[in-house]
Amino acid sequence: MNDPRRLVPRTDVLLAAPPVLEAVQRLGRERVKAAITAAQEQARRGELPMAADDIVAAAIDALPSAATDLRPVINATGVLLHTNLGRAPLSAAARAAVDRAAGTCDVELDLTTGGRGRRGAAAVAALLAAVPGAAEAHLVNNGAAALALVAVALAGGERREIVVSRGELVEIGDGFRIPDLLTSTGARLREVGTTNRTSPADYAAAVGEQTAFVLKVHPSNFVVSGFTRSVELEELTGLGVPVVADIGSGLLTPHPLLPDEPDASTSLARGATIVTASGDKLLGGPQAGLLLGAAGEGAELVARIRRHPLARAMRVDKLTLAAVEATVRGPVTPVRRALDTDVVDLRKRAEQIVAALRGAGVDALVADTGSTVGGGGAPGVVLPSAAVALPERYAAALRAGEPAVLGRVEDGRCLLDLRAVGPDNDQPLTSAVLACG
Ligand SMILES: *Cc1c(COP(=O)(O)O)cnc(C)c1O
Image 1: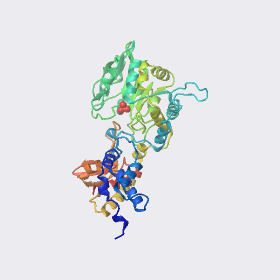
Image 2: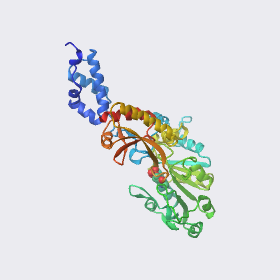
Image 3: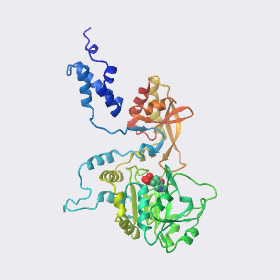
């Protein structure tokens, strides 16, 4: 009769209190419920009065007062770079670097002299150290900005034409198209070849007085097969104009599993004058656009590009600079680990999760699946993977959970593909499924 448990207000009553409902909206049920449980414990131990108001106040006090409405989502889609989920998750090193840079820092200050320093010098140095053949680098907000800046700086004056193959006029996604991006800068496109075939002679015939540069765009999100011909970078080097290679995905050096995915070092070695790429694709860093110039003309052009008035409008902040530097210098990124993990390990993890779920009565099975790189990278490449298969109705419940989990629905099942799920998320993923009850 004197069991103190009877006296503590019930969890469902406390969760219905208005300030608690507001906190649930802001922070999600799981975090708020955990704070309530902790406050109930305190009350049981006599550290708090037993009144509901006191317990609610203590729980609210323990929660952060401000937070973002952005909710963390466990990426169980099997798509490594999911644009709707913010593409690459940052490494622990990059997260720590962002945190360190978040206050005031020497992003544009030389602490030795006390005068202005080159903005982002450390990130540029890290890139130059990581990319053999790069002699100058510049960072902007994303890959599209890198391309737009090259176009406006190099094809905005006397020489206005960008020579580009019709086979490389790519739509990136969400209705955005590279040819529209380029012409919006005032540059003119000189399209050469056809959708399926372009030869070196097509480029040679088009290059002239008006040519600012030849552009090679990696058709990163589709493949053309059959009667095709495209021109390699080395075949474009003798035309007497700069060659800009938009490689897209942002590999700095070749990756053995993705032989068809271009990388910055190889592109420079094959004769690109300037390489442009994204920071949040296979590089595994924050959203950013990289501009890398080869020694000589490439370096001079990148130096000129970064002094262009519009470069100021595309300037990256200290958080991006810190994250890029840490990503480039740092240990293996989550994206790289997801790419390189052996399917045998994924299967083991799936078996462990399924065993835990079945033990709790959940109708779960291990399924063999295929993952993709996504984010407009490595089209057609399927990486063998393993998933936890659940009844379809779990898909919506998991999206609403805390943390939210995004799987994919296939053949009437909800598949939680583990390739893009970091191993440290196996437990939260399991708990999220159990919470769907
Ligand atoms: C992704 C991509 C872009 C755009 O880069 P963002 O960083 O998304 O702006 C441009 N070109 C290619 C080839 C790409 O794959």
